[in-house]
Amino acid sequence: MDFELDAGQRAWLAEVREFLHENVTAELRAELAEHDLEFPGGEVARFRRKIGEKGWFGLNWPREYGGLADKEGLGAIHLHLLMSEFEYWGVPGPDLTVTSVAPMIMRHGTEQNKSEWLPLIARGEMICAVGYSEPDAGTDLANLRTSAVRDGDEWVINGTKIWNSGAQRATHEWLCVRTDPNAARHRGISVIVVPIDSPGVTVRPLYAWSGYRTNEVHFRDVRVPVTNLVGEVNRGWTYITGALDLERGALTNPGDLRRAVDELRELARRPRRDGTVPAESPPLRRRLAQAEADVAVATLMGYEAASILDGGVIPSVEVSVEKVFTSELRQRIAVLALDLLGPDGLLAHRSPAAPLAGTFERLYRAAPLMRFGGGTNEVLRDIIAQRGHKMPSYGR
Image (cartoon, rainbow, N blue to C red):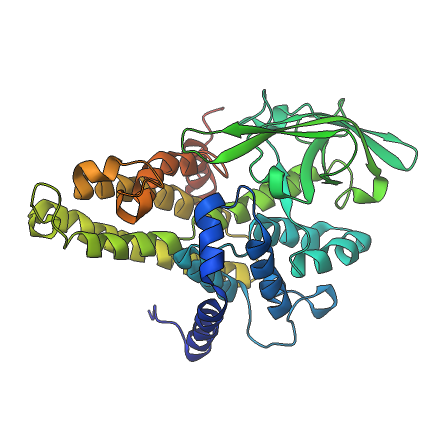
């Protein structure tokens, strides 16, 4: 079995790296260092426009939707390689709008859905927040209560979404709603795309222990055209589960973990405050070597899932395995980093005296969130057992 990239994929990776060298400016770095992506400013917008001009948000889409279908051989594996490199550089690239929302629109949307939204996504002009969880519907998403009632040519939406990451910078909400309260729980659900600036939409910040912002979003008598319904009414559960499978693969791209291991390898050679050198500690060397091997495994998992997706199949089991493995690896690397750095590793993120401005201190706080995003690891282990190994459900 050959795990190496072929000539075309290596050429693609070189093209992506050349783009990053030319367009990741000191100004962009400074803006990201100050604001992350909580309140992206002009430099992030400029960078996204450059990506859109290259056509890379829709690199494997049909040409009529703003994609690069005329460029032979581009597929999910090329998008995966691009995202991995962007993650390594720590800059914003294709987000969940590109990786999970757009594919569901292409697979299930109406022709109007496709012609209206896909070109905007391909140009980087449409950014979706994903509205799934509610105060009483998290892991048990089918318990959602946000409603959409048809009134003539409009849907009237009422309800609340929580843990709605990115809503403060989104242009639209990919919103999971109940359209038939009398249907079975999984069968009365639809997906509607709602402009975030619609009257009646209120976005309130929620900050996690990690320091990252998420949001609570309220919808009060929000009206949108009936044509904003994605695909068919009451078919939303199919769209949501497909989008979540794709989200898991995107969330667990290990590009930033490759960067973390590279940085830790360099930091391990530097003396700590007490004069000890981490690289001279056999236990720390073993853990660092294991982390590097695990990142290589996670990378191959990503290639496998992307290859299956290129075959036209959503790799539900494979991305669940990848997500569980990579999210738990992220925590192990964060713990390793703090052990390797010693007391300096506890200095707060953005503290001037902290190694790499406290990157690893923040990773330590943020890593646990990845065990929940896109579906909890406990639920994903059920999916792996039931779909992958045909084991019975225990009646959750």
